[in-house]
Image (cartoon, rainbow, N blue to C red; front, side, top):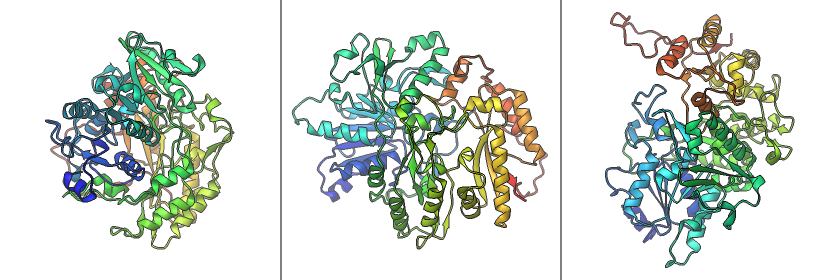
Length: 589
């Protein structure tokens, strides 16, 4: 992060410079730390500028001009999502900043940092990536301005955009530029044709006439143009579903015209093998924030002793962008690699015996696989409306993994905090018994999201009866273990297609059980999600019109059906006595 650190390593210059909106935490959950370690392990010199001042390029220039290129990311979250609530109110904190202070990164951080790099190092190849860039790779609806925006690649004027998990693409970019003679001009064409990346070219140019073009028309998806979406909002739904298919099947190119430019999306990069995942997560992360910080980074403490066991999610929830970013194909680490990581944790100076999580996007998908050809599958979801017969996941192996990890010397507690897909569990199966009896620390996060089956269908979530069935299993196993435990349900208000009456039905169901939910998210349309296209176009995935609470007034009205006090000014006559907070969730007995 500094010239002094470069000198201690004996580096006279960097090969690659990463600029990020997060604080620098050397943990594999932070993308820049992971990619930095990955490139260093391949013999490259990497510098990280974290949360630079955006009034001048001085912070960007602190380690000098990198030899190959600069990579820019807004950080772990979309910068606007990090700054604003569902009702566009400014957040008061940022978990990825020392001291949890808000305001350490700018709005639209990818664009701001890209501009700084261009000013600091004219002519240097510029690559953008991370969640913000990945999910804004095509024309997208921007909730915060209530407008359609074109691909972030065009607005950033970057040479390339990496989408999805970037290890393969970033290594390919680095090796291509490294292989070029030092006196040769590095052009945009040098970086074209890399899977998992996006580049731009003049709209008049024939994509089939270039060496890296798609082999056939059957492998090219032509998305509705930016102008077509502006003219007809329903075209955003088509574009979003086409992109979803490209991400899921992993074989197609996609192209979208935007004015006099066209954005070309290469097929997704192949997921890492188990051996490659093991290599990546076995790198020597310190699992600590950079020593230059004088205040703690809240997110670093939260995930310090957690383990990423797998990537990807077989679900296709329409409000979620995980599959658009990580893919639907599950990629899992070996049991031995996971155990080695945990064993190393027990030697960490901050270790106190508690492992906070072993999971991923979903806790119970480790080892899952498709027994058929996933490239030929057109289903948007492996689990709904019913579980695909080719989707295999051995619960007994997962239970054995957790048992083996818990038995490692020095591990006193193991908790599962990733959340689980209850529609994958066998009610009387080994995993549910082990989970509830051994790995729930009093509360278990579950995401039914709603109770109305029509709304759940729009979400691509299982029918509500499956959630009720799981509650019965949870209560039964908790009682058998003589434990008082609770389910913490995540719920969504004002989802596209959800009416006030649907919210009242959910509220009534909660009251019957004396539940007072605190985990309620008013639907926030994030770039790239299918539900965002529903919100913008007012149609479902089949093009059928649906009711949408679009204005903040309508959205707040639905939200207050579950959260009556949300946004209400404090009462002057409120009882000032300290009250014991009510339990959230389902008491098992």
